[in-house]
Image (cartoon, rainbow, N blue to C red; front, side, top):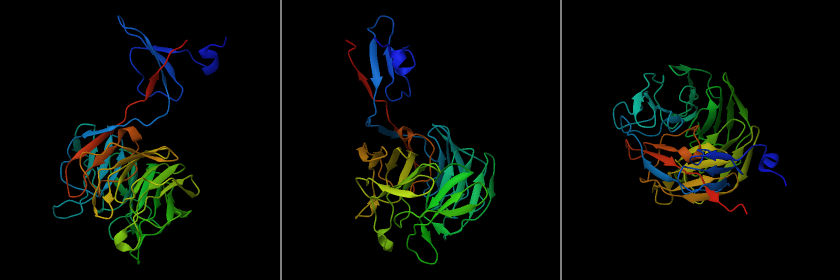
Length: 336
């Protein structure tokens, strides 16, 4: 009779607790002194997940750039009720509290795109439909090569300050959305394949070879709010399954096959929503809502997993932060 090792290439692990990140088909035994041993296996599913309060921002703000993870987060730019409205500060998050990064962006602005990590970030486009691009190396911001098409409210994502995508947004001179997509290689932007539809400012995540965007549009400017989802494969966009609730000005994190999408403007009322959905590469599933309905959150391609999302700030201008945690799905079974 075949053994588990001969079939799977490894022995069944004996652990004192469930592994933190099991993979599809993994099997293990939980054994503790004085208790009955339990064999478990992992299968793909969508656990409910929950939102909980995180550390408050130093200042009520919204609409800036966000990168990094839930325990190594990074935000920059955006707007606040203070004067001047657009601020240049950057802040780091350690999973508990925010601290001043002491590295201001060169040009304060909101409604820009972002990508990267807490030590390798990119901030591009933004207020007044600029072409401006700035890169962060962990200690300072430097202005680098401009976009070919100036815009604001674009979808932005990417894994580092040398690899990012800027898609859609509002370009001059028209106020309506565009489908233009540009690829950043660390030195310059190159126009690549357009999105399937013109839109602006939904949620975005992923890498320059496997990205995803959802929602967007602007009903106030002739581009209806959409539920559309598009996947980027490094060369072109493909439309896939729609969101359950179309909206714009939302947050996004994860990967192109595990994409968490949260908040945004809830049409037709025009107010913020707390709705949360997750995408598995094919379709969307509704999850537990955020505690606070919010729109205009800090946005960009946070590089954490969908099971560790971070909703930062938003409108009305708030200091509150929420953290999303999604547990593992396990099944226990007989081995007769």
